[in-house]
Length: 172
Image 1 (cartoon, rainbow, N blue to C red):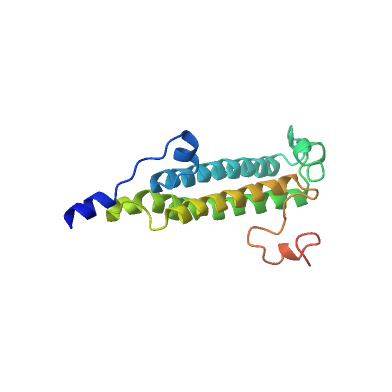
Image 2 (cartoon, rainbow, N blue to C red):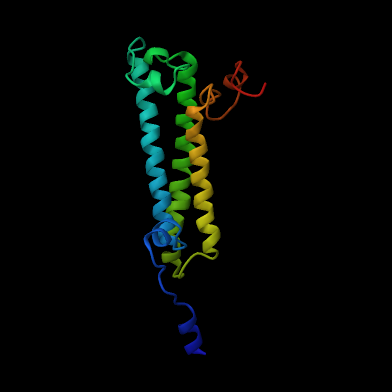
């Protein structure tokens, strides 16, 4: 019986870079992917925060390149009040849903939890991999909101009134 249990748990590492590092079922690699996605979300959130703070300090200064990113929200690089709310909405959404929830729970949980309890891997490694990629697609959809016609939502990251009740802020 000892031969069977010692023999059954080992498997060879996957060959190739993409299978090993991108579409991996190893909990440590998936944890690092969550940490990387969290770092990308932190950097984007910091840039959005800097844009908002620059606007608060110098409200009439044109920010180079911002007019090309959002011709309706920042014509000529000047941030409109609506675009400021859009930046705040995207900053809050990125920081709360992709940094404060993913990094501590998914990143830390995937990387360290199996090690702490002495497990070889997570219980369902393919679902674990799929959960990261669904999260990544959600991140891409959120970032793509900058490139649609009216720009990102402007209802605040909670989407509560009074910001969500503004014209153009939501479905109502």
